Image (cartoon, rainbow, N blue to C red; front, side):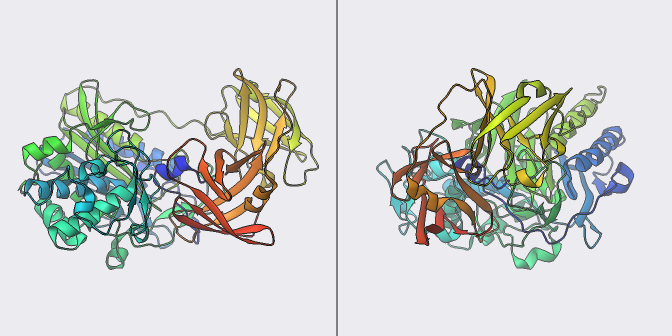
Length: 584
C-alpha cells in the first residue's frame, strides 16, 4: 500500500519495489511446483503421506497468495527431517528454487544475534544489565529516562523508536520515548545497535562473529550472516508489488524488487532450507546443535525466558530475546517472522512435541502483511499427527474470494460528497449489496469491492486506485465514507460538516517518495480538518511544520521543510527522508 504510518513502520518498514519484470501467470500444481525435496535417510514411510498432503497444500497456497517461490525446512530433535523447494527463484529466467538457493530470513536473524550476545555474556565479556553506552561511548542518546541496557535492546523494551532505521542513522541522536523496561515497542534500530555492540566486545566484524559463533558450530555452511553482493548470484530474486505507491490487491501484479545489500543486524541473514533445519534442531534441543552446545542450558533458558507481554500476530505471547514465546494448548512455541524488501519468512519451534518448521517466500508486501504462517502451521499439524499415528488433518480451507463481503448490506446506500481536494463531477457515491458482494456504481460501471480489513476496501477503478475506501460508523452504523481527501456522508450522519485547519498545512499535502527501497511512497491529505498520512493515520502539530503521530506521544516526529512556491519539497518521517514526487 501507499500508506506510510507509525503502525506500518513499527511492523518493520514500508517495503517498496519498483517493478521491472512482471510475474507471468503460473499454473501451479503439486507435481509441477515442487522442485526438490531432501529427506533424512532411513526414516521409513512414517511421514510420506504427510509430505504429499503438505506439497499439495503448498501448491494451492502459493497460487492463492501469488508467491513465485518457496523454501521449507522441517526438523525434529534429531535434525533435519525434510528440506523442500518450490517454484521459481527467477521467474523471468525460468530458474527454479534449488537446495542451494538462499532466501532472506529477515527478522528471524534477531534470534541469531541474541545467541551471540548471550555467548559474550557467558564469557564475561558483556554485562546484560550495564548501560549500552558503556560499550558504545559514541552513541548519542536524548533521554529523560534511565539508560537502556543490552537486556532492553534484546527484548525491545529500550524505548527506542520502532522505525526501522538503517545503519547510516545509528550515529545520529536517538530519542527514548519511555522508561526502559516498562513497555514493548519492536525496534529494529535496537538490534542494529546490538550488531555494533558485538563488534565492540568481540573485537571482530559482525559477520565474522556470527559465522564463527553460530554458523560454523551449527554446520550452516551454505548460508551467509550478511546479505552482500558476494552472495547475490545464489540469492533468489525477490519480488514486490509492481506499483508500490498504492494499495495492493490479492493476486496483484508483482515485479522484481531493487537489489540491496543488508548488513544491518536486525535482518541480515540469507539461508538455505537445510541450514535452517540445523538451526531448528538447536532450538528444539535447548541450545545443542549437530556439533554440540551453541548455548549452555542456562543461557538457553535466559534466551527463551519471557520478558514482557507482546501478542504474536494477535495471539497471546511474550517476547524473550529475539523470539516470541507462548504456550498454547499445552504446547510451548518459539516463534518469529521476518519481512524484507522482497522476502517473507516465518519460523515455529514446538519444544513440547519436538517439531519445528521454517518457510520463506521470495515476495513481500503481499496483502494482509503476509507471512507463510499457514504453511508452517499445517506442516507441524501434519508431522504431529503422523508422529502420533493419528489421522492426518485436512488442509486449511481455500482463501475466500476477495470480493466476498458477508455484511455487504451494512455499507449499501447513497452517500453525498462533503469535501475533496480534487474536482469531482459525481457528488454521489452509490453502493449496493448483492448477496455477499458490495458493488460501487461509478462512471457508468459496476465495480465489486475487495475486502482489505474491517470497514476497508480496495476499488479496482482508476479513480480510486491510490487509496483504500474506508467507512466510518456512529454507534456501529455506517454513516460516512473516506477516500484520500474525499469524504461522503449518508442521511444517518449526525456530526459536524464544517471543519477548520491552519491554511499553512496545504503546503504539506501531496505525494512524497523515499529513495530507499525499504520505504515507499506516502501521500499527505487533509480531511475533516485533520492532516492524514495515506488517508488514515492522523498527525498532530507540535510546532510549525513538525507533527507527531496521533496515536503516539513518543519522540517520533514528522517534519516538513524546504518550502518552494508554497509547497514543501522535503519531509522527514522519524529519521527517514522523503521528497515531493510531483505526481498525484
